[in-house]
Length: 348
Image (tube, rainbow, N blue to C red; front, top):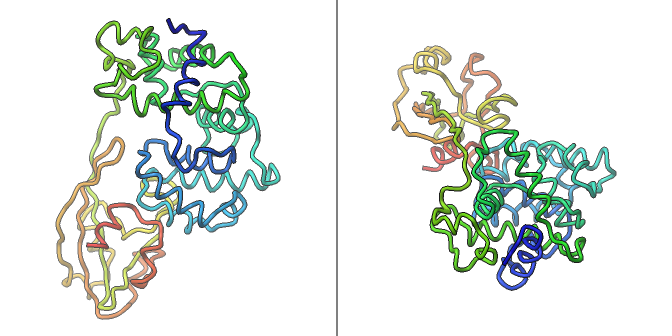
């Protein structure tokens, strides 16, 4: 029977035969490629990340290339992947690797955590996958695997409880040929969570540690992990000025570096229709047309977006109240970093 002590070696043996081996960021110990994939995979499915990973690696094949890029280009390539703070932190981290570490990624998880956007689990993933550091990861998939196997019923909404799970996870690492086994263990425990120990209807018959899994024995694996704290959802109404010329030029503004859609290019955003009208020169106000209201869902907020269309014959000044906006020609705006709902609106 699998034990906590043999758990890691069992996962290693399983990964060799049954784990995933064809992901584009696998079969490499290049910390840049592994780190890039780990950042992209945060809260994003593999099928979506594949395309973005290939695009980033083609445009920025090294960390120095990414560090030298302008943030606008980075956000443009990231556009549609969501959670844009990941892209901004990723860009800053690349610059820190170049400026502070001579363009070479730190080899240990503790130092990796000093880089922007790299938390404990991501740092451990890079350090274990690339450098064989015996350090546990604890992303969402791994939490599910471990809590089910252990029958860990404590509430992970508590920081203290999560720290306790970290400590247990550290005791479950492989025991044999540790440095060489760690990359396969880290990949394997992620593979288990992604392909076998899934949130709904886990494939317990395919699991290499099912013989000692408490959740399976209880007959309720979907009860784990326990996390009672829920994000309180809110909603917000926003009005968008969609000004376009007969040539297809669009008036865009760059959002502030904090807040929703930080740093992205966007249609001018207003908290009310009245505020939108007041910001326009009087001669344009009678030309406004209401568009179809649509909802965009963020992690803990629903945005109800009200597009207001303004068609103009040519690129004219919209007024100082519009701030630092600019006309962007039809061939250029698709390459900019745009929020997903704005890209959808402009494309339709």
